[in-house]
Length: 313
Length: 278
Image (cartoon, rainbow over the protein chains, first blue to last red):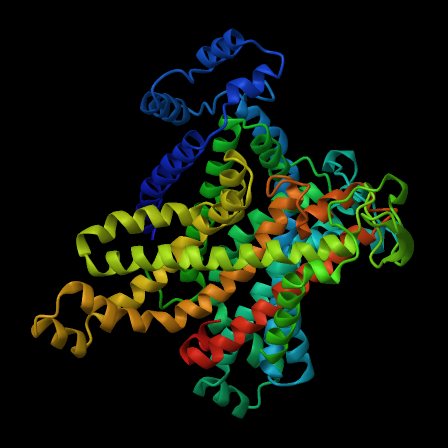
């Protein structure tokens, strides 16, 4: 087991190396000169050249890459061109809201989606099933920001139950913290719920036709026990897998949700950095998101052993 | 599926017939008619000096542009982006997938690169790609298509890997069929049904991502009417005038829903095995 985790951790290194090369190449090969953006409209060509030298942008691109990788391995993410701060500090400042929002979204989505999927499978073909499936197709089709604005309009503007936008850290009071996160969480969770509910339904449906389910029913076990202990337990692996894969969807959603609700998180930082062509920040954020994605999926693979003792590594 | 096709048909018709359906120029700025609510009537002066009454069915935005005209024209951009991204990513993915599935020595390298691409969240990659190149329709299409390629490559590769062991492929090889005709005649047709289904879903995703890029201000330039741009323009005054976010949002959702329904229908008819997977 530990050997497996170690092996998998080692295997993430080449993937992340490829991500690093891709991110670096992508940012450097596309047109757009950060030096002239930083210098501003009034700058002379001499100013621009000076900035370029200071940032190391005048060196050959391969040299730039190895300098960057070298710094990266020492934990130095570089200095932001635009925010004039260490990228690491910048990321640390912004990581709180994003972690809070994503954690709440994952928890809420799983709590809602798994029971929905199980009930839809159990009552296959009924109106509950059709409502759940209909919601799921709709969830994939309505964009995150439309959901966000509809929720803001109804709950914040019309009913004034919740704050419209913004973020309040946990240390400034629990009520305000949760209050500011309710609408963003609901917004972001729609697509995630749609995804998890759909997979849960399919996977439970498959299990429900097994012999041991019939046996369990024949023993006279109540439906609740059969569904939770026999069906869901055996259907868990694909569900956990999709929760992991869905993280990629979630990351995209975080970027939008944070923009709609003016939350000062990593998603907002990404958009700001991209608009300012702030290479070091963009590189760091994309690498970070990819690393989180890869590691979370490793965690998912490891949880298989707890869910299904037949799986051994 | 029938519903999906019907809605798509209406949206396509709307996009094609845009000049005849609209009474206003979608980019004409009218300082007098700023932030009009839906249904308000305006006087339009034609080129020959005569005036006529016209109605802003969906109101106007903060520059006085007619939202219904912009929404109707916006359908063009969304459909073009959706279809082009689907075609582009499927073509690229098909080429790479066929080659890597067939030539074993290439497989390892290409698949690692694809793993790397897949590890970067698609929307993030698209945002980064598009905003770092010159903003425009082509850049947006390419930026949305690139992150979709790896999944097509994987799909094609898996089909090729399973098909190349089939007796009829071995038979074709043993009678000396050259590689190219072999791929075109015996392997390619097997990949098509799942690809068509996948292409539909990519089309839906592409329409969503394009709207999203425009909305974030990194996509197609703001003066072009796209659904995302209309919403981006309307977001600042959203609390007072929700209509400029609401209408494009409804059209966007309906279109994506229709494409998704079409995809589900195609999946069930073309590839019954995939039905179980999702």
